[in-house]
Image 1: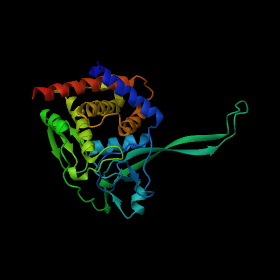
Image 2: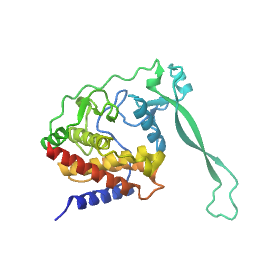
Image 3: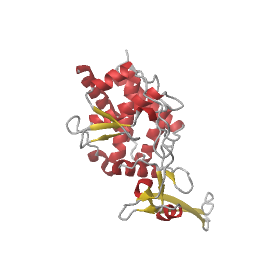
Length: 294
């Protein structure tokens, strides 16, 4: 007989295997204002940022409430005919420049190429005047309800609100903010409806960690990396609950892609995913018990 602990262990192992096999890039199942990409993009090149820059800009957007995924340096915004508002605080991105150097004569693998890291200050589209985002995509209308998932999420008693194009848990008001249902499009691996509930249970795991509930403080274990650790908990917890609620029957590439991005910040700690998985299992059990008692 397979217990929930066995299920959670199996899912965690599948996630690790999927990350190692093909981490890919994360794709969110809804459309953001100002463009279809959920990844931060540069105003001049139109290209999305990579690696640690995704994390930095996602975190900045979350903390400061930026809705638009478009970024650029002060000069790039000026060249685009826009003006960064006085007093706005920049966010940091890093990039590498390659240069030729003399190879070490005793190192046969040294080709003389060196890389140096540089930093650049960028501003979000919400920090400038004169930028006109692309028109909002048309609403696809309300999603169909998935009975089991809908009953579960409602029974938790969480304050769930809809509006805008961001998903987050707001601790000071103790509410979950979800994008408008009409923005959900799904991905190559999940339907609109599955995508909606997958995002909602992700935010419910965040909600479970509030002080008045599980009081999940990750700073003691992860310090400055606690934001990334909490995201790991939420996404692993969402993977657990998605399987348990029948939203999906297997670990989706979406989960692995999202987790891989956050794991870049935690790869110095090989036990991080297991610690996060333990907290995720605790959160899933808490939410399940809460919903069962309703």
